Image (cartoon, rainbow, N blue to C red; front, side):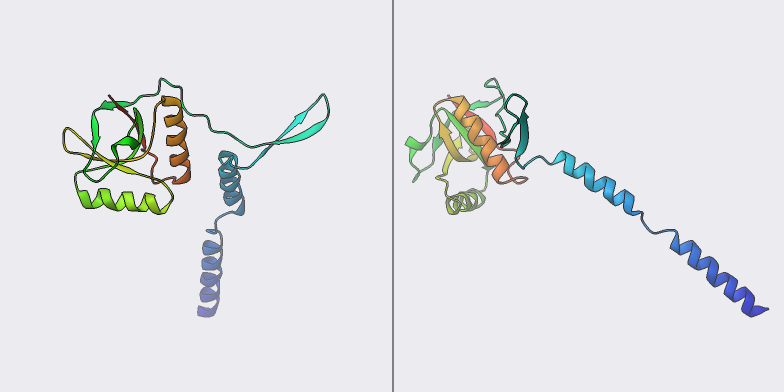
Length: 162
């Protein structure tokens, strides 16, 4: 009799723990949802006139030229070339600690940029990765930096050096 109870309890445990497995359909649904959000590959466009298939690479347009900027006066710190600072600058870091600012500057130099360290009136060191005379070019550059280093520099911003 004890063997029957033991056998019944073992079967009950097998059924109880066997039904706790995650369903493959749940994984598939999550995977398909993630794939829908991801749109980095080329897009096929069918032109009905000629019945041709054309590959079009997705282009991320910068926000409108009325995108918000932070206006402040900055100047290149000693040892930096002030000619590299133009009206609109893409700032990727702002530090009080000089060591952190220099570290980020060196990292960006290794990646092929020509960053400049600038200081504002409050003593904050801004790491300026690119600088332009017009806002549209600055917006394109900011978006390029954000996309290249995602998710690290998602908070890169435009500084209007007045």
